[in-house]
Length: 87
Image (tube, one colour):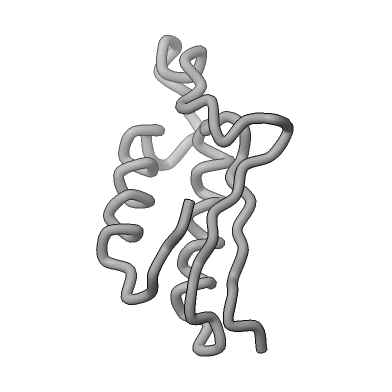
């Protein structure tokens, strides 16, 4: 098992990409072999932030949680993570 767990941050955060990021963080935190979590950007950017079009329209009505709620869950998980996280 690797001591380093790398997660690719999506270029733009929308409900689907933020849910995927949350799932990847949960897996990295629960991986006993991972001692450090690295969050890396791609496509020439670290992250552009929340998709403002999703925010402006209120998101997709089929989404179970609004984008801000999912983003908050990611931030809370990062804050409570028992492993060092580098971004």
